[in-house]
Length: 384
Image (cartoon, rainbow, N blue to C red; front, side, top):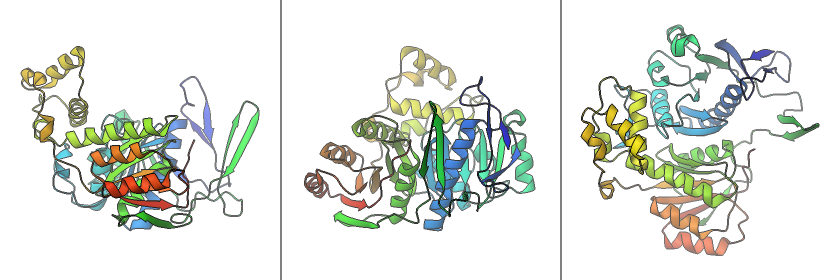
């Protein structure tokens, strides 16, 4: 049994123990994780293992408050994608690229995040975990362990994942239970091989299979109603946790547009004071890209710039590099043509949903009108 540093809140106690004795999903190597840290670590670990198995490419997931902030494969950087990296030389290894891409999806979210990677961590990746709270990985080299264990004032959490740690003694089918208000709720939660029921094409020609895998793995692990924009093997906008799908779509679209605007020349060209760290620079670029800075925030922004006058210069957003070849996935079917129209504005060419929409004919027509393929799966991904 592991005594955790806190429950959901500091005044709550918490602990964790394996369902099958002596078969925990990880070994605690360093630090003192909280209840939420463990949930983030386990969810992120499942995501990267599934992506690694399906694509054969190194994967990384950044989780915050039990949902993904960013998920990515370790592909080479596409033209312009490398510009978002603000932590020194670009990594030339697949795992390093996956970490950079996943944690660059939303810098404001991947700050104090828990990170999972599919490959052993070496000293080459250590700088890429700056401002994270912990990492779960298959292993760490001695040099990487020593360096990371001194991060975050010595409180950095290091977990070694176990490949067979999900078995729970119920005939191979994992289960999840929660006790609340005097009732224990239990459900089967066995990881599904691939996509249950397969996929079929409702409209158009399927796009990137890897992007489809990243998008579906993202909505599989995000709080419903989840929507995820993905391009070139990395998430660029995730919306989740709202009570209706249109709000989640607009949240995901706003984050994707912020990701897009962060590549604007004026945003990339911001000159900061030397005392401003790399993570803080990334957050300020994201805040400028979001727009609508209040007077107090703009004054704070001026204080971190080499030339404070730059804080009052609004970029010409029409010069933002366009998006294309984007995949949008949903965790459940929907009947809203509006989602297709929002997606088209952000360069979506592949829509992925579970089957069963009551407005299938209208969706098919809208996808065709916007030159968008529509892929349906036989599996719904709700998560709460």
